[in-house]
Length: 364
Image (cartoon, rainbow, N blue to C red; front, side, top):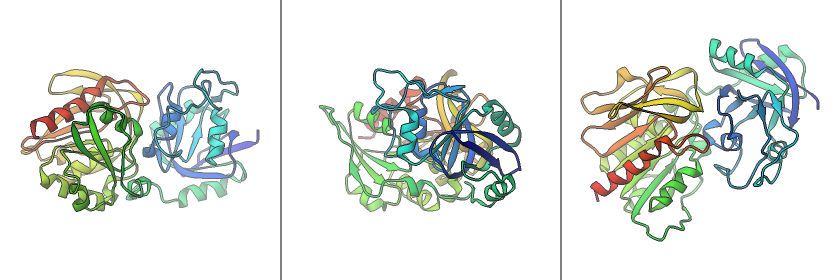
């Protein structure tokens, strides 16, 4: 295994060894606190443009299977772990994590102090970086990291969205609800859950005109998760504004939450190091109950910018009291800043999909 270098834009250098891929990869370095689920994390389109550091010390021990893929590709720019398990063992496993990364020409590096990386990010904030297996000139790599675009102001959701609309293959016997899904970087488990709840799902690119969406006469509209800066996705925000005017029941997750909030006049801001992992505490302010949920976002909605006359804050992240959910007081519309579909993560917030179905039922 050859040497690998991580260079951050602030001049910090970490050294390790590669276990998959070669060359250079660029992105914003972030950390994820999940103990399992590396395959779902890598294939979550929300990680487009990011290099993921796993805080759990041993990664790869159960390999990769065919069931836990959340999209058509690996979207994370690279993977950093403390120790890569060269031996994997699981009855569903088809290949090793290293083989999987190699298939998609992604770099995986280990034998690095991921605790030090995580503490540095928590102290200084998420930042641009480059990982390299071919260049050991630290100064050159630091300059490369500084010169990259980063995530601020960038519309990545449009780049990861599907190219054309499609019907989600359903095996449900009774298709009760006709639902349009706006793909901003969707995870497949969201579609699986909608299917399980009896939805006949049509997935649309985020660039679709509202006229095309309304042609299927949807009874509900779902806006998915996705990557990048919500303030940079103006075209998607304009589409969502049009969707709100239809008064068709709307449900948004993560990036979808941000799109709905911005369309309703709120502002977004960049979190210092984001929320990424499967163990974030969320309080439902309507019931005072606390749930543990999966997160992956680097931007958030400013509570002070929310129109309190028409919108109600329904959920809070208890780690930092940021907005984790809102609903409209007069229209069938709600959204959350986390991932109730899990994959990976706890299933505590599954009820939100059921609330979406109830909303469709109320407005049929």
